[in-house]
Image (spheres, one colour):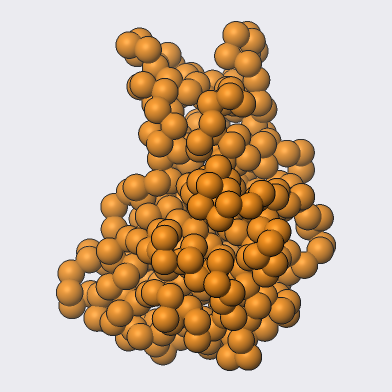
Amino acid sequence: MPMPARVYAPTPANLRRLAKALRRGDLVAIPTETVYGLAAHALDPKACRAIFRAKRRPANDPLIVHVLDLSRAEDLAVFNPAARRLARRFWPGPLTLVLPKKSGVPGIVTSSGPTVAIRAPAHPLARRLLRLAEIPLAAPSANLFGYISPTTAAHVRAGLGTRIPHILDGGACAMGVESTVLDMTDPKRPRVLRPGVVTAAQLRQFLGVKVHDAKSRSPRARQRAPGMLERHYSPRTPLVLRHPEAQPPAGVAIVRLRMPGAKPGQHVFWLSRRGALTEIARNLYGVLRQADAGGYRQIWVEPLPVESGGLAATINDRLRRAAAKR
């Protein structure tokens, strides 16, 4: 029987212990401001291959490399002036930049492609580990591939508890959805490969140029960045996008956006009491996991109105991918 993962409180001694574990090639699930990541030494191909095995992740889906700051990022990727400006404005934070990789980045990290996805996380525990370990960390979401991303240590343990040795408990993630992934290989034509917390409108305003959207990729194609598959972030229970006025049959869980003063019903799950986009994003994956554990035949989710703006596009992107047919 595999040994269950040990869950560590974020004490100074434990952080030093986990930094050493990362340097020697172990896997450690760590909190970030977006979701929990499954971290390994990004320059150790053997450690990175262990990520793919633990998650059952296909080799054509590259990893995001986490670094402490722009200086360390420039050791791994070729930055153009616009990408450097973005890093100075949005790092540390939930923006991942895709840029030409340097020779020291292993092919396993980039799915043998010429670019690397890289960001500096804002979570204080992730940053302390990066300082202590003094290595870049490859860290996709700490869950089995394709399933709902984890936003608590308990989520990680439920999915990977017998497949990894270490979990750092940093509480619930503040943002709850993954970072924005922006392709900056051509600074005149930036492309959002995965919408996230940093919105396309923010990027367009900052860069002063049109920011394009990328299309989803087929499961067999090499991905330029994580989160580009048509089906992803999915519960095991079939998820259906429905208007809130639709009448569900028996055995269906209902996930609604906001609770206007009423208590939730027996089969109703609410994402926000006020309808605030930040609260909806923060609660999205946790609520989907609750509904998925309820033994329902289907989960019906109310999508956000397209005119909501801001994070609405990101939340609807995750719901659309979660609802894509198998």
